[in-house]
Amino acid sequence: MQATQDTQIGYHVPVMPTEESQADKGINHPIVSCWDCDTVWRSYEPSRCPGCARHVGAPRVLSENETYELMQAISQLDEEAKFDCINGFDSWEFDSSLNQYASRWFSIDSRRIIQACYVALLRQDTNPKVAFAIEFFKAEYEFAE
Image (cartoon, rainbow, N blue to C red; front, top):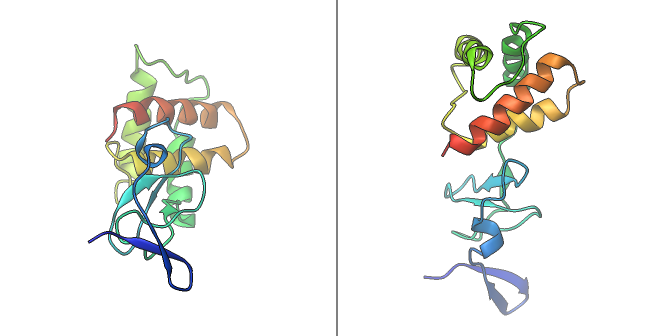
């Protein structure tokens, strides 16, 4: 059975995953999902689910409480913390803070969660701690699933 999208009365267009929707173009390429069938795809523009065609995909967005917990973890960073992929002591400490303050929802293995954190931080006032966290999430995104 192939999913279709109604565009006009009596005319159906197949809804299929496209190269654009499946290619990973990095943390700035929105990952969206269908709340009905749990299909996950990528899209810069609103698009119907390629799995069921019933709903328009939505990105994972942090709730107010999740954003607060994320900011609590960030507040634990040392003012002099510098992001370094190679020597990751500050990264390890930040990961520990995330586990302490955001353990009920945060997963270092989830690209959707990491991307939601990254997007939430882009909306914050920039300071050295937020800049560190943004770099941390960019790096961790590459290793997550």
